Amino acid sequence: MKQSIFERHGGFAQIRRIVSAFYDRVLDEPILARHFAGLNMAKLIDHQAKFITQVTGGPAAFTDEQLQRAHSRLGITMREFALMADLLVETLEDFALPADDIAAVDQAFRQRETFIVARRD
Amino acid sequence: MTEHRHHLPANDAGTAALQALDLPVALADAATGTILLENARFFQVFPSTGEVPEALATRLPFLDPETFRERLASGRTVTVETEVAVGARTRIIALDLRQIEHGERPAWLLQGRDLTKQKEAEYMLDSYAKLAEKNARELTREKERVEKLLLNIMPKTVYQELREFGTTTPHKFDQASILMLDFVGFTEMAVARDPATTIAELNDIFMALDRIAELFGCERIKTIGDAYLAVSGIPDSNPDHPQNIAKLALRARRYLERRNQAHPTAWRCRIGIHTGPVIGSLVGLQKYVYDVFGPAVNMAARLEQEALPMQILTCAATAGLIGDDFRFSEVGERELKGFGTKRIMALEAERAG
Image 1: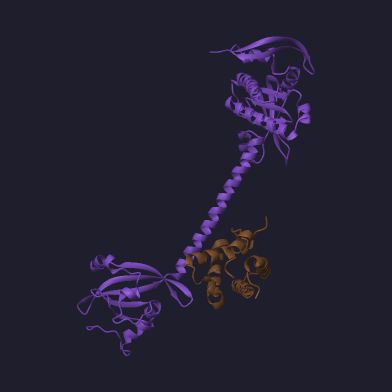
Image 2: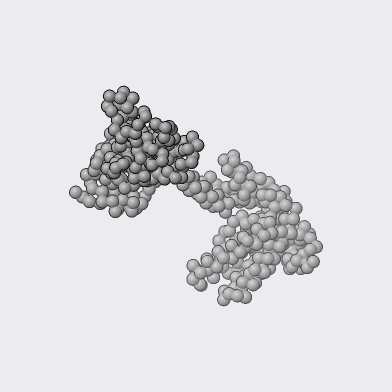
C-alpha cells in the first residue's frame, strides 16, 4: 500500500510542527481569526490537528457529510477558504515538502470547498 | 524598596529591566490585595479597568486569594493557570505566587509563565491520541468481524493455524464421525411455496442445528443447498465422537418434530451417520472453505439417501461404536454404491439413565 504524505513526512512527530506553524499563521489573519475567536484552545487545536491530518492522509477520515455538518453554520466565505488554502501551501513550503506533495495536499483541501464554504462572496 | 509605589522611576536600572521583561510580573500587598507594582507585560495580559487602587481581585478575577493565603504565608508557592485573550490570540499563562517581605509587610510576588506552546502541543497530542484510539477501536471491531466470518467457514484451530502460519496443511483424522442431513422434497417445497419464506425457514432450522451441534461437541462443516454436514472429532479429537454424532442426530430429529407440530409447513429430514477416517483441509485460495474428505463422508451421504423421512441410518459397525447407551432397530442388508453390501441399522433413541 502506498504510504500517505502523513506517514512519509514523519507522522505525528513532524506533522504536529506543521499544525503548530499553520495555526500561528491562521490566527495572524484577522479575517480567519474571527472564526476561532470564541473557541477555547483545546477545540481550536483539535480542529487544526484533524484538519492537517486529514489533508495529509493521516489517521483522520471525515466524510464529506461530517465536514458539511461541522461547517454549515460558520458562514465561511470563498475568500476565507482560498486564504486558508494559501496559508496551508505557504506552511508546507516552509517545511520544505516536495512540490508534488504540496500540490496533492492543496488539491485534497480545495476538493472539499463545496462542503465548507457557505457563502459565495 | 522601603515604600509602596504604584509608579516606578524610569532611572532605576533594575526596574527598567523588569519592565522590559517579556513575562508578566507583579507585586501585591498580601493584606489588602492592592497591586503595588507591575511590569508592562503584566499590564497587557491582565488589563486594568482604571480602578483606584488597582486590586488583584478585579484584575485577576479567576484568583481567589483566600484559598491559598495560608499556603503562601507558610512560604510555599501556588501556581494558577488561566486562559487570557491577548489581541486575537488566546494565551495560557501559569502564574506562580509566593510571599516575600516588601518593606516589612508581607507581599505576594506574581510571576507569569507563558504555557501556550506547551499546551498547544498537549492539546494536539490529545487530539491525535483520540484519533489513534478511535482508529484502533475500529480496527479491532473490523478484525473481530473478519474473525467471526472466518470462524463460520473453518474450525477455530484451523483459523488459528492459518493466522499464525499464513497457511494450513490437510490433517488426517483416523477416527471421526460424520452426520449428513437433508430434507425430503425440498426442491418441490422451494418451487411450490414462496422461495423467500422457504429459505428463511431453512436458515432458522440450520441455525438451530448449529446450536445443537455446538451443544454436543460437533461442528457444522458446511451446508450444500438443503443438505447439512456436521462432524465430531474434527479438528480436535474426541473419544466420544460416535455418541456425540448420535446425540446430534436424535436431537435434530426431535427439534424438527417439535417444530413441525408448531408450524403449518412440515420439514422432514433424512439423516445418515458414519464413523471412519477423514481428511480435513482448507480448500481454495481466494474463496477458501474448510472441507472434509474420505470414504466416511461418502458413506454418511449414501446412508442418508437410503433413509426414510425422519429416519437416522447408520451401518452396523458404527452402531457398535456408538454403543449400548443407544437403541437401534435392524433395517437389513442394502447395496450401497461404492461400498458393497452393508448391514444397516436405524438409530431410534438414547436409552434413559
